[in-house]
Every structure is written in C-alpha cells, then in structure tokens.
Length: 310
Image: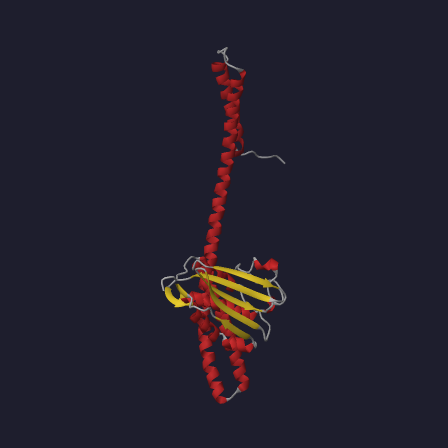
C-alpha cells in the first residue's frame, strides 16, 4: 500500500533542507574567506539553523493540535448547551400536564373521601402521590438546567437558619411518619442569621432531610443540628441509614449519579439532589462535607457565611 505524503507533511523537511543550504552558503561566502574564524563558529551557526527549523516544526504541529482542540471544545460546548436546553424544555412541557393530573386527582380524592369509597380512594391517592414524586424529579431537572446554563439567580433576604429548618421539618413530617422515623432537632444557643436566598437555603435543607428519610430504613433515627463555628453557620443532618461506601463518596455530587449499592437501587430518582445541593451551597460561598460508613449512616455538614450586621 503506497503512502501518500501531503504538502503539510513535506514542508518541515523542505524547510530544514533550505535552512541547511543557507547555512552552507553563509559558511562559503562569509566564514571560509576569513582565516581567523574558528570551526566552532561554523558549527554553532549550523546548529542554530537546525534548531530554528525544529522549533518551527514543533510550533506548527502544536498550532494544528490547538486548532483541533479548540474545534472539539466548541462542539462539546454546543452539545452541552443543547443538552441543557433540552432538559429545560422537556421538563417544562412535562410539568404542565402533570399539574393538571395532580389537580384533578386531588378533586377526585375529596369526592371519594365524601362518598367513603375506600378502595378507589387508595388508588387515586397512589396516583396523586406518584405525581408528586414525578413533579419533584421534574423540578430537579429544571433546577439542574438553570445551574448548568448559569441562569441561577439569588434573591437575598435576611432570615435565621432555625426558621428554615423548622419549616422543613414540619413540611416533611408526613414522610417521616410514614417510615416511622424519629427526628430530633437541636438548635444552637444563638440565632444563626443569614443574608441569602431563603428559597435556595430551604431547598438545601429539604434535599438533605429527604435523603436522610429516603435512605434510612423504617423506624430509623435522624438528627438535625445547627450551630456557629467561627464566622460560619453550620447545618448538620445525620442518619443511621444505609450509608455510602468510601469509594462512592467522591461521586455523590456528580449529576445523575447515585451510590452504587443494591439497597440504593431500590429507590427512584435521577441522582440530582446532592449535585444541586452542592451547587446551591457554593453559590452562597459555603461548603458541604460528608462523613459516612456503610450500614452505619451518613452525616452531611453544610457551612454558610454568617451575616455579621445583625
């Protein structure tokens, strides 16, 4: 099979040949007539010319590679943008009919409850509950697409971390009761004031507490703590659930990633909760840490800057 040599392949070798010829020409016309010149000078001139040629070859190759990388990066960025837009559009399209389904199922629940039709009432309640689960997944997709596209906006207000935790625990009380969990809340001695987006901070608390409820077997124990550490307001959510394997901890904040265990695979979800939580924490100049051991539970620690002007 004959090998085809392109002009681009041959140019560097032609350049080397030309530069060597120029060097020889200089040697003949300039260096040879001068008897005082040393041979070392001749060698130096030729060496410099060869190095220049090699440098040109190297820079040309690097330039071509950089152009290829830039084009690949541009294509990847475009694909990423299209993916984010697709997620956002599909999520919005799904949420609209789902809201209608939830509305009608709620009305049907009220009617069946009045008629004391327990059998059909349970069916409708299941539809309504699963619709709520699906809506939660869709909202996660929408939040994720906003974060990915850089469209996350923070509406800052002054509030305490304790009032957000109190609301969160109250709203998730039904979920806690269904699994028979015991939730203990321990507040610090002084109120923890934040200048932050209240809705986003509540979403952080909801995600962490929902995870604790979800991944803790029936009749488990969950502890929520708030306290001050230096200039940071800290929130801890600890459970005695399934825990996370050590080799999986580094992956838990990756989108669409769930801890890979036979127990965790029983649960529905896109694996976006912790990815969104970490992004929301970082958008408030905070940090999130996790300590976990399989079979013994997990401890998530969120640190957020305290508002000092209170």
